[in-house]
Image (cartoon, rainbow, N blue to C red; front, side, top):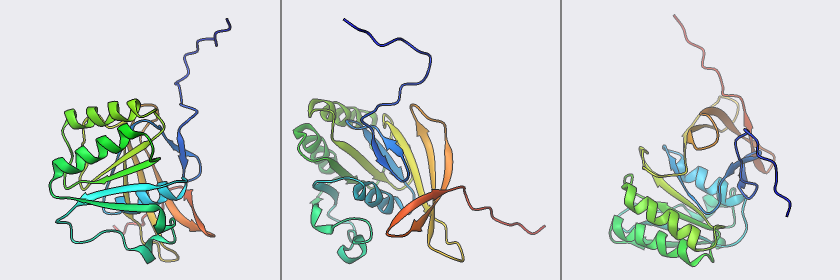
Length: 200
């Protein structure tokens, strides 16, 4: 039996889900998206995937992503919105859908970061479901314990075009880093962060 040689290089899962010029999110795991443009980032990830998307959000939330506004990111017909009465119900729904393993992407729009135990339960559910589904939890300020990675997205209104600032705050395999995300044709592309001129 042939065994691949051991190396000291960090292991990058080949089955990671690519988004935005080759950045990857490990499948079968739950990742956290934070910041005022976290829903935009979730739609960018969904736009790079195929198949249905389950998007679970609080019943008391003022609204959900608007269909016509989603068209630039993905086909809104792929998204099933599920409203839950309590934050605990959002977490339960995410766990059950991940465990079923039939939906490629599950998004949970949470009012705040969940505790370590629910995140661990979701991670185990994703593994039980075959390790291919991707879980995204959206929180305003972040700090969900047990998330595989944490990404922040904020608007970066450049004078010449619409743009966002993407920050990889935490990742098990890669260091923190910033990018500028800009429109490119019908899609999006990464660029070095835009410098802000200061006047002394």
